[in-house]
Length: 89
Image 1 (cartoon, rainbow, N blue to C red):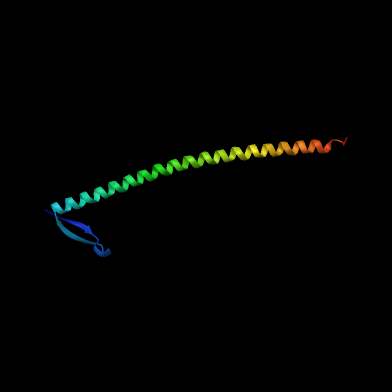
Image 2 (spheres, rainbow, N blue to C red):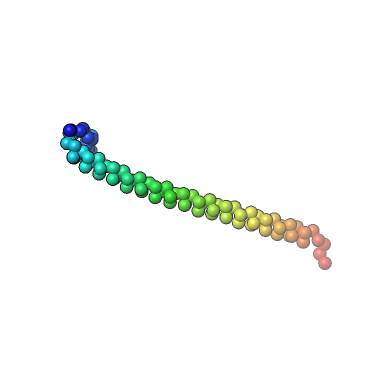
């Protein structure tokens, strides 16, 4: 049995005839490459999920720190206002 399989020599797309054994070998090689690509993409997705979680945690931490800083600043301003409104002794 003969199959037509894609071939890209020197960047030119063309179809060529292959016997069953060669086609099976080439498809097995392509399948292996696709499995490797899939594995790499899964790994990248895991890294992306981890980084996303880290960035969300960092964002929440920064929000909390900013809120605490604002509260301290407001408290210091109120204390300064209270001290400024008292008559000198």
